[in-house]
Length: 331
Image (cartoon, rainbow, N blue to C red; front, side, top):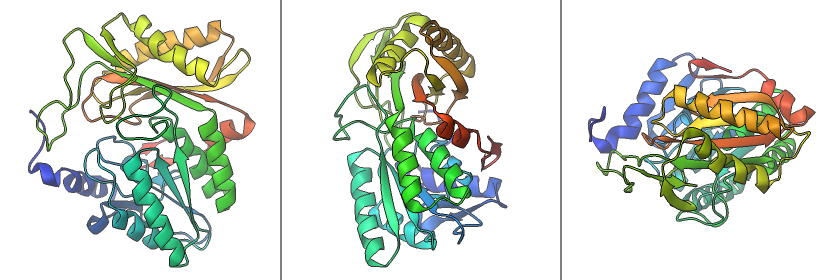
């Protein structure tokens, strides 16, 4: 294993410390709970939005804390749900008079931690509600889930509810918006290589030199099938066809198109994939109104990509277009 790692057990704390030091005016690090939070949070005039999940998916979620996005993120170890007390203490620290919204990718460990934290926070008098994200079309159930997994489409839920919260929307309205965005968002990914968690020190699974995993999860969970490597356009078809068919997306739709890198794929290759996907959507009469190419939800150093589509209407498009600032990056 060749990585910038000291003690693997300190991998996440050292990363979080670096994030805070790089953004001293906007982010605060609370090491007791692996918490990255906005320096101006909680605010009395907005609902606080929190997401956790495991580490290893950066920029999700600790690098999506900022104006117009999350108010805080309290990740667990690499690919591990945060402990319940991290979520509970984070919820108390970020409690706003307007309430707290917990965003949870649909993985069993995350659901358990956030459900228990919500129950305890409600008992303390905090107005808190939970929204589950399950945009992955590749499998219904997986190693880590009952039902569909929450993957890169979580970005669009965060962006929409974050924008609405900044505009003053109440907690019930944020739930409505988040559920609406989740309902029209679909994602599927594939792996070209495995990833290497620092604590393990070796690849999480084995792929042959000429093999890919179609429908892989962001923790390396098995997908639909293992296949031989193909040209880029054929790989995009493997992802795009199931995504289009699942909602389905139809001629006349306006969509947001995301090609998300899983951590080890050059940006040039992501743009090759994006160009072909854009053309295939246009051929079907589907208009790409918003474009996202880059790393939004990764799997450490895994080479591979996912494709996400969001069916847009005026409300969703306006929320996605609202200004946001996360860390050193402005959207």
